Length: 374
Image (cartoon, rainbow, N blue to C red; front, side, top):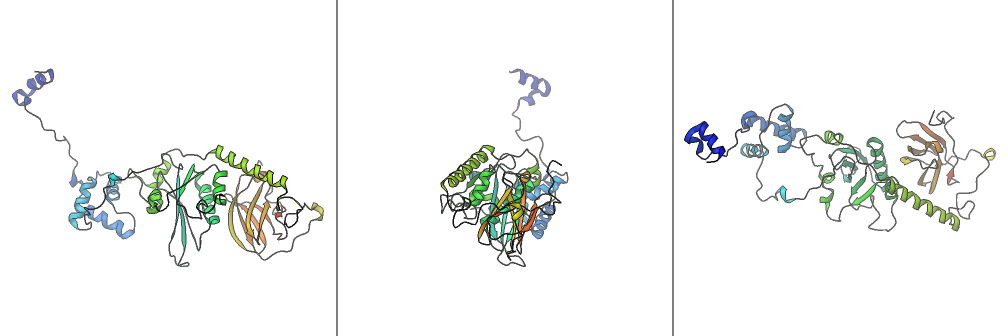
């Protein structure tokens, strides 16, 4: 007889040597939340619109301090009451391979969907969410969506939440030019300059972007916002940004030294000519051009560049001390206004010179032209 058996026999006698039950000592009370309450919790989300699955139902009493039944018990109650019909042929969840980014902002997913609204029946909604928490970060509706629109929504989301380490989208041409060209698009270059790595799912395989495709709920019965704020965020790659900037600088240098059209001051057929002395500059004639707001990052020269303004690329000088800031540029009947995206500070307010590529800097009455360190 072992020491343990001897101790048991001393305490319980001969009955202590009989086989013991392996059942758990404590059993969760399924009646702590009545079946009628479970059915009620199922009906209310269906009426209001949120998710009404077993996880969401269990989360409600749990947040009220009451231990809920197991998900399987909730499912049996709903099947018995009628709101849920069993689907025996459905593929089990355990057969799927799931992925979740570890910290917030390690990966942002983005997609756009057609969604009719009152004023625009064929509206397109561009949205972004954080892969780790499923937290919706930004959503904006457009009549039609372009690569510039996608880039603007990304920069707006960055201004609100910080810059992610990586993005994940499908292969739509508003996200990537890879399927149709070896040259990166403007949006792809912007990501690289910011140190953000870009990933694209396999064609005809939307499961890769499943979270943004279906807006899955967060794990652990936490809200997406709680999961998003629970950990430190991932950051973009500064080495990628530096390499991309170096490649652009090298390309511009080669074009300048080779005398490429459109880059050398005074070359034939270009809109960028040699500088005019400041005392000889005159107010240009206003062109009746209106273009909606676009978001830009001020480059290290203190400039922002935008294409297709009166048929040409235009460069606006906002001042070197504004380098790195996020700015919104609006053209209103030939008047160009640039404002800081975060503070609303007017960085430039001037008449568009449609005869030139480079727009001379003209701050708004010197009101906001103070150095940033003041």
